[in-house]
Each structure stands twice: as C-alpha cells, then as structure tokens.
Amino acid sequence: MKLFDQQQIKIYNTLSGEKELFKPLNEGYVGMYVCGPTVYSNVHLGNVRTFMSFDMIFRYLKHLGYKVRYVRNITDAGHLENDADVGEDRIAKKARLEEIEPMEVVQRYTVDFHNILNKFNFLPPSIEPTATGHIIEQIEIIKEIINNGFAYEVNGSVYFDVLKYNESKPYGILSKRKVEDLIHNTRALDGQSDKKNPQDFALWKKAEPQHIMRWPSPWSDGFPGWHLECTAMSTKYLGEQFDIHGGGMDLKFPHHECEIAQAEATNNHAPVNYWMHANMLIMNGKKMAKSTGNFILPNEIFSGDNPHITKAYSPSVARFFMLQAHYRSILDFTNDGLLASEKGFFRLIDAINLLDSLKAGNDSSFDINAWQQKCYDAMNDDFNTPIVIANLFEGVKYINQIKDGSATITKNDLIVLKKTMTSFVFDILGLENVSKSETSSEKLSGAVEILIQLRQEARANKDFALSDKIRDELAEAGIQLNDSREGTTFSTN
Image (cartoon, rainbow, N blue to C red; front, side, top):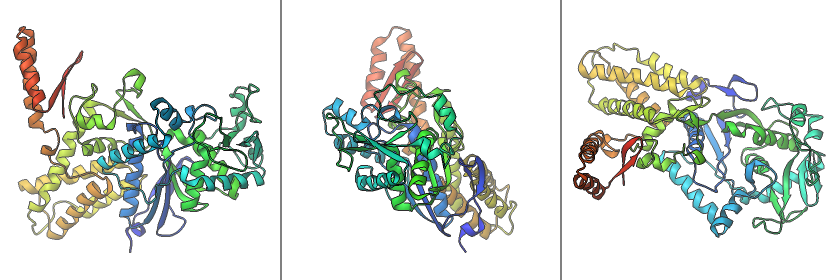
C-alpha cells in the first residue's frame, strides 16, 4: 500500500476559495505545472520563495508515492514590459542595452536561475520547456481559438475577444473579477490600438521592424503573447486537463485568468483542477524594491555582502527561514528572523546527528506513532510547514531527553523516530545536514565581532594605524568589513 492511500491531502484551491480533498485525475499520478521565470535578470528572492514552495510540494507528493510529472517553464520570449501588450520585450530590451544577442541574455540568466536553485537544494522539475521551443504549438492553439470564434486578427496581430468569451463562460472566475468591473475601471482605447476592447489580450503580436525576436506565422512575422506560452506548454506535457497549476500570487490576474480562458476557448473545458498561489515576500516590513535599496539577492545572503544583514547565512538556513511561514502567508525577510532561524536550524540538525548514538530501552515514554501522524497531518493540511516544523521540534526535545536519560525509547520506536525525522527534514523540507563549521561559524562571528569592537575603540581614540591594521589583516584573511551608518558588518569572501 502506498503512503498516499493512508494520507489524504487537502489543498487550498484558489478557484473555489476553499480547502479541497486532493484527488488526482489518474490514481497514483500527479501532473503539476508551475510558471517559471522570465530570464532577463538575476532571479530575485521572491521568485525563489515561490519556487521553493512548489519544490516542497513536489517533494511531499513524491514522498507519498505519487508518480509526479512536474513541469516548470522558462519564458525566453514574448513577455513585454509591465506585463502588458505594448512596450518592448524584456529580454530584447536587456540585449539592446548590453549590446548582446537576446539568447545570450537568456543563457546567462537561465544559468544563474539554475545555480541559485541548486544552492537552495531544489529538485529539478521533470520537464523544463522554453517558450521559444514551442512556437509551433502556440500557433496551432491560436488557429483553434480563431476557428472557435474567440479571437480576431488585426494588422498581423491576433487578440483574444474577452467580451465574446464572457457571453458563454465567465472571464474572471479565478480572481473573482467581473468583466463589467474591468470595463468600468479600464481607460478607453486611444485610437492607436488594434484591439476591439481594452480587456482583450494578445495571442500573437506583429513584430515592429526593430523587434529582434520574431517568428513566421499565418498572420505576420511576430511573437506569441505571454499568456499563451503556458497554455501551450502545460497542455503539451500534461494534457488538456491536469491536477495542479501553481505560481506566485501576482500571476493570478491577468496571467492565470487568461490561461483559463485560452484553454476553455480551445478545448471547451477547464484546464486545471487545483489552482495554487504562493504569497509574496517583503523585507523589513516593506515591499522589496531596488529603487529604494530595500532589496537583497540570494547570493548576498550566502556572502553576507548586503547592508540589511549582519552576517552570511547558509542556503539551508535561508530555506529553513522561508519554510517557517506557510506558503500562502506573506513572509517578512529580516536579519533578526534569519538569526533566530539559524539557531533553530542547528538545534534541529544537532538533534538528528544524535540519533545514531541513542540507546534503546524496554519501553517508550513518548507516543512515536501519534507524533509521526501529527507531522503528516500538518503536511496534509495544505502543506502547513510551520506546524510540521513545530512538531519536529517536539521530536528534538524527545531526542535530547533520551540523550540525557530523562526519557526512554524502544528499538522499534527509535527506527520510526529516525525515519520520520530524516524524511521530513531532508526529503520533504529539502534541508541539508550542514555543520556549523561549513557556514559562517558562531566562533568565527564572535571573534570578528571582538575585532570590530577593538577597531571601533581604536578609531574613537584616534589610533587610525591600529584601526587600519585590523581592517587590512582581516581583508587578507578573506573577511571584508563593511562600514555604514548603522555600524560595521562583515562578509566572508
């Protein structure tokens, strides 16, 4: 018997606004599609959090014994600025500014994306298709939508007719928006647009002469609309209907709304059973933004080279920090939160490393099976990782009590304890058994903090020679001091 026969998952379905019992279309198999990155810049931490949520979900489904086909795409064309149907292609713009080929931009940032996710110990998806690799499929879907009467061609561009579609099927079913409200809140067309209505969205755009990325089609040399890419790739690899579609909360409208409309207009039925959305990441209580400086890149967490953090943190500590919030909750990224998570993470790892040295006895003073089921119950309740982690720390407490002789455990229960702790920590949460010495260790941090304090005293006493000597010798040892208004921090090279 597979674990999924014993453990029933409830998933919060954005479409219904309720938690629903998960029943895959095909028993024992799960098809899951997650919208991947547009590769025109370094992957930011908010993206990482979204993909981490679905990595955790992928891991749990596999742990339960499901055969999962996880498709996560790469958008390497068609995503215009401001997520609209006008403006410049994001990748082409980057290529123009840097005077390189668009595919050089794609290659550079796809490699960066994979490198960062590897550091966070992500499992690779089953399939990682690209938008440019599926132009033919997108053209065929457009033909079908036109034939079904839900799209029109004007001057070489093709648009989805939202009002026509809404006559028979509700547009806005996912985001709970009504077309009437969209019409009321949308500016009238300025006469320069080819659209019949402002709500219509592009399926194919005719390329202007300066547009580098273009492909031949029955309508013009051009490029596909951003929304169409995911419809083409998800249906090709998962079928006309599949189990789970995920992405960030910001994609719910219009991107995912348009995906539903495209699929319905093509196949006349809903494409997805469970729509899942991960919430946003903020920093120090505010929106992350490069323009305000309230921003951090993943690699800066690992190096400590950012004014918002006081030290470097390992990828597993950062991952542990993010999983302590439910995927549907807003997460506030703070240095204090990371510091607390680091202590908790090493408590967890230290306890796991004690497991092999524990001695079994004649009885157990802790109900292992009930505790194990509590861990599963938390994951089964819409993948509630904060509760899972709280339950794991019950296990940590028990391990430490066995070690100091204040609790007992039988041989069979010890086997269950080991299996449960390692399965949840490493296989499901995706953490790694990292020792303190492999990170910016606490001993090193303490020693450097003492030197920073001595340097501050030297500067206060105007002993600049000693101050400079401390800074320079630390630099030679690979430790960079960073002075700011808030004080001095350090990073390791």
